[in-house]
Image (cartoon, rainbow, N blue to C red; front, top):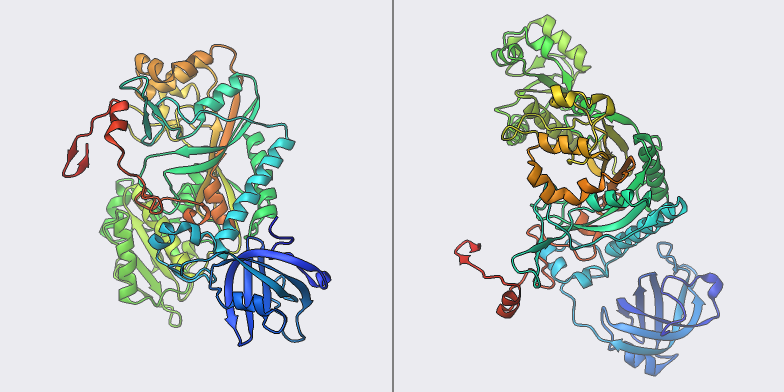
Length: 594
């Protein structure tokens, strides 16, 4: 090895040792006859001192050194002089007095500073990602990811799970997003698909008798990107035979608690994960992935405002539409401009406008453009229902149920952010269970699965598939943390007749089902055990544990929001010869390839 110790290893008890260190120049300070260098590697930093009085040759080399040069230094470990210790540095009580300096490789001036976490435009960071990854925050994030995955493997291995790899090249089947397709050279006109998840394969592994399977799986989806999406991502894929819902939930709770304690920079808010039904989550928070670090819950006020003289509310209530509100503390003095900002947010979510009331903090008078349409008794009833106090702001929404939920759930998060109610120093997990098996309404006369077509209905609801499919609840469960869905799973269908019935309800003909899922349907006829599983998203979980808002900050080489790799200039054109080998011809229009 070119070094005897890492740059974060030496302590006071190592004083007197002769050591060799190697790493990057984090900072260099020339004090005239003495050069101080903070030498950095993955483990930390050590101050090395090159004194011309100790070694003129080493000093001559150190004078040539600049930031990000790769060095090897040899010298003795000494205690720093009294008053010169650095308590913010793990190695801050010692320094290395250098006898020899070797430049292993010089460096050009980097396009941004490596030794500090300053704001740098993301395109520059991604173009020079190998430099960005040298920065302390990124190294910390990738280390959190490593520790989390290491803990997952050890946790599941101890519980008799088997790590099994599944194919990356598989069959294109409908799973909710567009597939990435791979043309076959040896089978002209035919394609593989990169897996959106190993869903069918892990079910086949249960039928094969492995009973407890897991995989740190790479998955691929060709969909529009956002802060918590990437075209390729990593999930913990897990499936177990002979289980019920609670078995999976208890297993994952123990895994999450242990993983957070082992790897996370952000602690748990609590260790007893609450469980909400889908109906309760949507009713109270307007979403099936609620952030429960704060209140601001949605309150139904239709019975009060439906009797008022405010025509919009009264007509909507008469038509069966909801009226809900949230009470925001200490915002009753919001200006017209601030209220206009909130109305713009509401309109972005489908609202036609935003009704509001504000209670004066001193006079306790209620102001707002709709106040005149309510009687004193109705205003009192509203303030009591909403537990509104002087200085509070009440925001209303009334429309179709989905619009009301979208508007108020968005405003709820917006106001919590403005008021600093989201504690970024805690992870608040909860389970959402009892999802509908199908989405509301029909698409082309057919139902759409709420999760995916392999999710089992509750056993007691199976008869409803023939009479009222829209009322059927499923065995789906989602794990939510701080407003993000971090895992989704279900107990699966394991009987061919039931799977065939679900496929018919969502519009699959017998021929389509056989063509796309024949391998799975046939396997169900060979003694498929009851089974279920879940797939926590590694990227999102690590981002939460590292306190990062964007999953790109915890991935070594992510894509941009346009699904491009700026570092390697990918995707890129390929040679005509390669296209011919794949039997592919490109038709290029002004809008691009078609």
